[in-house]
Amino acid sequence: MSQETVDLKKAGLKVTLPRLRILELLEGANQKHVTADDVYKLLIDQGEDIGLATVYRVLNQFEAAGLVVKHMFDDGSGRPAQACYELDEGDHHDHMVDIESGEVIEFFDQEIEDRQEEMARDRGYEIVDHSLVLYVQKIKS
Amino acid sequence: MSQETVDLKKAGLKVTLPRLRILELLEGANQKHVTADDVYKLLIDQGEDIGLATVYRVLNQFEAAGLVVKHMFDDGSGRPAQACYELDEGDHHDHMVDIESGEVIEFFDQEIEDRQEEMARDRGYEIVDHSLVLYVQKIKS
DNA sequence: ATTTATGCAAATAGTTTGCACACGT
DNA sequence: ACGTGTGCAAACTATTTGCATAAAT
Image (cartoon, rainbow over all chains, first blue to last red; front, top):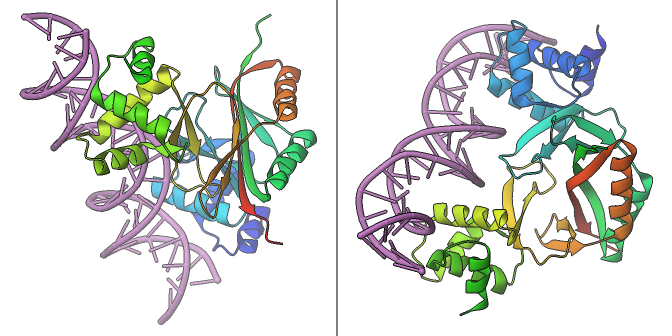
């Protein structure tokens, strides 16, 4: 029994072909951050018989089960937003998006995390979730 | 000639009724952060004859002209995203959203700004734009 | 055999666009 | 008068849902 099968069972999800394929793809992907449409197209290219609706359904279930994290990058210039997903490896991190190449870079800074907590606490709130995205471009020197 | 009229001319936009009404509304609003639909409904309630499409067009023009800033809050739980707009008063700030009331609170922290710059610079990038949203709830004590 | 998942197509939500008419200068 | 802006309806994009069929246990 593969690790993916175990992961699915642990998440309380029946082990079906589409779910396995999607999970494998997320684990093996060269790009950690994919949209529902990316997943769909990759599976189709790979010869799978899958529907886009199923991809959305499965990704939502994965998100609910904590297998996957969903982001809403608006690519910095307010274009129509598209959700993108990555496997939840347990390590929290934020993102910067290279607006020229579309590349997504992960980073983490404890100082920023702490200050965020403080900002919220000062106002009588606690943080449930947060989203920090830097839209960046390569420094030309 | 009103201040709004001047602002519109300065932005290179012809001074029309819808544009004036929307600008006035943004300036006078009790809620600084409004969606296109909020604007539309408020103007309709106020007896204006305006179309939703015009609201979107005008808000986009205002954004392009730098009169207004557009945000994409996904209310923390990945619900369908809706854009919201606020007047650009020139002061940069970030936002926290009370996930229970929907209230939007502004904040600013130079430390966070600096660390962000550093994170980007360390990786050979410069920040073009950034978006930081904390999804928070009131601390129950 | 039963329950749950899937694929397809139709529905939805937010936003944009084409077009004939109305408005601002 | 001229060029731009507007309202309406239709188009579009990302995503969700209803339903009959197909899998998984």
